[in-house]
Amino acid sequence: MPARFELNGIAFSGPTYKVGLMLALAGEPFDYVHVNMMQGEHKQPAYMSKQRFGQVPLLIDRNNGRHLCQSAAILEYLSDTLGKFGGATLDERLRAREWLYWDFDRLASPVYRARTIKLGIRPAPQEVYDANVAGGNAALTVLDEHLSGRDWIVGEGVTIADIDIYGVVAYADEAGFDLAGYANLQAWMNRFEALPGFASTKALLPMESRVAA
Ligand SMILES: N[C@@H](CCC(=O)N[C@@H](CS)C(=O)NCC(=O)O)C(=O)O
Image (cartoon, rainbow, N blue to C red; front, side):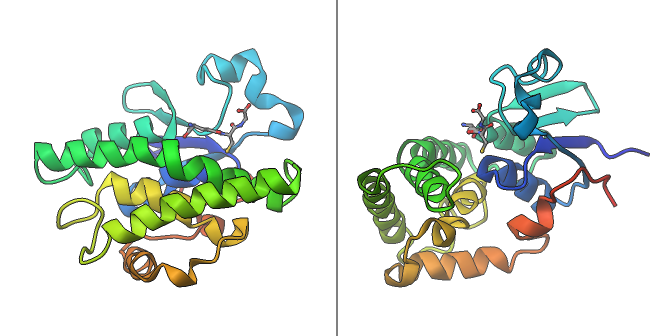
């Protein structure tokens, strides 16, 4: 029987990793479809009919034919439909959602941008890189302070806030951030990486399409 979920993405994509990570932690096998962005496959009508923004990730739920885009919205959908990582109460759910919005507003943008500059994917002047590193460090400081005395970002268990934010900080090193001064953040990352089902970016996102095991 084919896997319920089909994740379309590319190997270097943080937002794609977030979705793959959620599925892995939830114990949901998924088919992975490599989108050939070099050849502009993500801007072709066939792809855009399923992903209106012409981006990765795209998640297809074969149980109901839904096509889903925007990683944070996909995490919320998966949490709703699988009944996992949504928070123990309505208040926790609301807090988790606040962190998802905060992430894309304050953390993901500078970290992902610094990474694409550092790796030469999107070259930019040094001052642009420096500004992104400064913005990223400001957000990492907020996160590190929040994690003082806490195991997880919201409540007593893992939520989509942890998954979403891990899918950014996993790339911080590659982006040129020094995490040594963020002790609470590092301890949280270690806890997160010890979760059953956890997998690294490389393990989850191959360079080619892969059918679920
Ligand atoms: N906010 C979106 C961002 C998705 C995104 O930026 N995807 C990139 C790859 S990492 C992409 O598809 N870029 C091509 C484009 O925007 O045309 C999400 O979280 O899903």
